[in-house]
Image 1 (cartoon, rainbow, N blue to C red):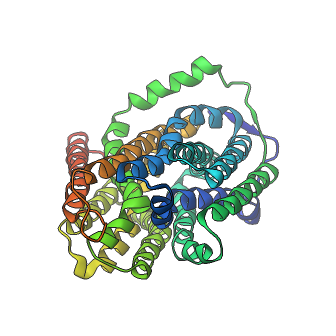
Image 2 (image 1 turned 60 degrees about the vertical axis):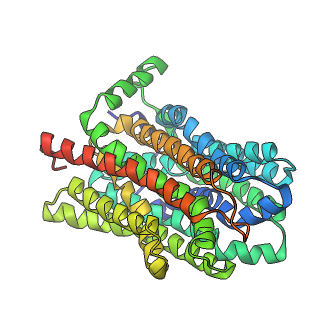
Length: 418
């Protein structure tokens, strides 16, 4: 039974696109812009504030820390109060975090700003997934989720060349001030445009709401799919959001313009990948093929590309990083798989529990790579040692391989064909 009754059922079609889809897409666009922007501004931060690799990694990953810690309460809030109210208030917090980041003078101040941004955009994807799970037929969830996630790729794309151009007009502080104003504007738009929902009479209290976690964590399919989803997506986001840029500089030895071009290509993949996975899922559904099998094939290709990156196949770096970006968000097919396996009343908590675990791993991954890098001295050019990337990226790849083996064993032992 759904946890909401609609004050007025929104018709499918134009209103869904203009009044619901686009405001939510604006918030998700900003979440990925904030998540990815440090890959471009990191040299400016290191130069101005004299940050070490571990400080840079911790400050950047604070986004994931704030984002991940808020996922559990986010799921309960979404299921009790609906996407409109929750998402609007959270984006206000993100605007405050961006403003604090713009005036930060110390590593601690920047870390606090990044953490608040992470909390504030924590509902960007989950509010939307919850809205789609409530308002759309379940058979359309993979396609709707995939198309929506393309807007995150546009945010990542905006964090590459456009940021480089913006930095020619202002500094990183001015840029974050503008982002704070933009985020506040989207918060108002979401609050005004999204339909309001009332709690149904059958919705239990907080204790009953929290009991839904037991149903999620006791589900065998959740624990077969979640580790693979968590390790693959988290690795992609942690590398794309910071270490891809420095790898291209230090391992591929590319100039700033070429680095920006590579990051733009990754962002294009982030935009196109989830939409393609959505269409692939729809084709698989029509053909009677397994979505779990499709997820497994994408995971295998994703890990193969990472293996070539670890082995430093720099001669085809454009191809490797394009496919890497293409498959990061494509792996989010797992959200749709799990959403279809639970009652609609658990939609918010299913997605946010998976997201919490994934973001927590992304925080640890981004910081871990920075910590590992410091075991090697800087190169003569002031960059990080190529060997340090091999070890850091290799450890992240090993966790994905372990999760993939677990996924395969689970699918074969249970015979799941969902």
